[in-house]
Image (cartoon, rainbow, N blue to C red; front, side, top):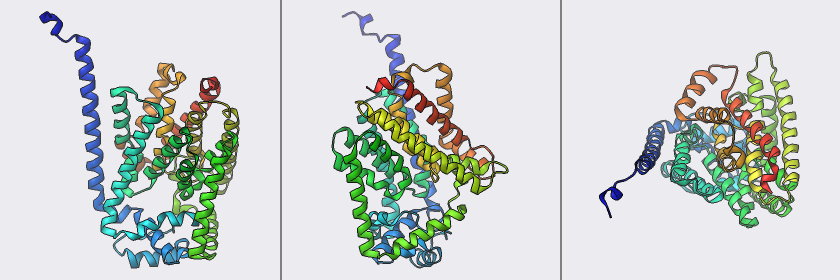
Length: 413
């Protein structure tokens, strides 16, 4: 073999450099996320939502679940069990059937739980990424690292780790549900979807899509699991837990300030920021939009009923539509977009979209990266900015994928 044949070509050198740069970017973004998460834990007692979850498990097992939905009682319990944790002005928001899910948190000592919780959330994010690659196939070495770097740099993931929010667990439940449904394992899929009983408003549109798509067994088994959880809560805490929850929801209906809906990248959140818009009017319009979105999810399921690609069609359209029209969907919940984005980028129409649209997508995704997120959230949204850029980006994405999926619906068949 000649010496010239042993020399790497220009294309080979460029390919290696691209691979190395992609690997270096993935490593650097991971280090940045780990470092920022570690440093943020020094303020865990000031911002973490973990005490709410641990308290839910403790009071549930003690038969005092009703106290979770009373601001005065839960404040007293919190100060007694977690005196070092910042005081909060609202109770636990998960419905009573979600309480048995929180019970395991009561069995772990608080110092250990704070560390274990971060590890669980981190493992859930990594596991979700791996499942997505198995669901939609490899994007190639560089492409896989691109998605990994994007996940590591995402503001929603950092915010979830920073305040101990459960969105990585919801992401894992969503991806596990999708993987199980694709494999025909209805019961495991139902258990995964039942986890959303903690935030049922995020699961209802997906359930309607399943009904429209004729996946009745999946919905039935999920409802049976939720009903079983509800009966457990009833047996342990009695009917008072449901009465207290109904009362809390009624109070929040007339005073939504404690949950800060104006910070959400939703129709409701944006309307509440508009000058001259009364909160009651904003909620009425947002509820109407949500109802139309639910109807749309059901009808989209009907359209995709006989299509082999019905699952991808649901993830692409239903998830962003759910997030943007939900009455309560915070910034960290945007993490649920990961399977929708990856499924979307696997479609033919996404790959052949015009350059202008691709640039718009890149700009939209950039808004959700850690440095830009911190600037927009703390320096703009918290100071009363009128237009929520995250709402505009999420709304535009939801409209685009819905319109494109409908136009190219034959691609799912």
